[in-house]
Length: 366
Image (cartoon, rainbow, N blue to C red; front, side):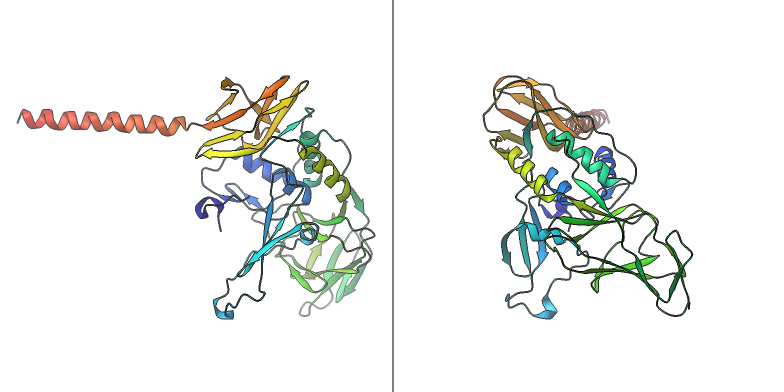
C-alpha cells in the first residue's frame, strides 16, 4: 500500500516528482530507497521515533473467521523484533498494530542547535547525528559487538571473510551463533555488496528479507528483549563465492533512548490538522532561545504564523521545517499555499478567456 494513494499517514513514497531532499535524507538514514521512492524497511527504534512513526502494522491471523483462501497476502513483511518493546494497540481482522510510545510529535520544542553531518553508507553514524540534532543529547546510542566465529557447511575460506563453496552443486552455509547479553535492541549491519542475489539470510531458521531497491548498507533488527537467547544467523551462498566482510552487530542503548525521548515529549504543544493544508499547535510558552522542530518536509510553499504574525522558518537537518523561537507565548499555524498550482490555474484561466474571446471575435466577423 502507498500512503498517498491509500489515504493514510506512512513512511513510504513512490513518486516521479518526489522531494529530492527527503529522498537524500532517507538514503543517508538507511531505509530502502531508489531515486524516487523509499519505504520504511531497515529502520530502527531511533529512526522510527525521531520521524514520529507511532504505529506499526502486523499481519494477524487470530480468531478472525476469515477463510484461508480469502486472507490478504503480505509480500513485504519485515523482520522487526523491536516491536516487542512497543505497547499492544489492538487487532482487527487480519491485522494488528503496536504503539511506539517514544515517537516524537509532528512538532516539538528542543533546546539546542547541532549541525548534522551525513556520510554515504553509514546509517548508524547518520542516525546518531540526527538524534543529537533533534534532542541535544550527545550520548553515543550504539556500540559494536564482535562478530562470532563462523561455522561452515560445504564452505571454505581463505581469510578476510571470503567464503567459497566446496562442492558447487550442493548447498553451502556460513553461520554465526550470537547470544544477546542484554534486552537491548541489536542490529545486524550488512554491507552494500552483500545483496539477496549473493546470499540469503535466516535467523533461527526464519527467512529474513535483505533485498533493497539499490545496493546499500542495510540494518536488520535481530534481537530485542531476548537476553540469553541463542540466535543462529545463517547465510546461504547463492553463488560460488561470497564476501561477508564488514558485517557488524550494533547494540542500541534502548533505555537511554527511551528515557531521553519520553522526557523530551513532556509538556510539548499539541498539533492538529485544522483543515487540508493547515496545521496548528496549541498555545505554549518558551524561555530563552529555543527551536520548534518538525518532521514536516521543508518547502517554500509553507506560510507560517506565530500568534497571527507571519514569521520566517529555516531547515532542520537540511530536510525539515524548523522555527527559531524567542521568549514568551506562541501559537503556531502552518498553512500550505501551492503557489505553482495557483499560478497554473491562473495561466489556464487566462488562456481560456483568450480562446473564448478569439472564438467570439472570429464568429462575429465571419
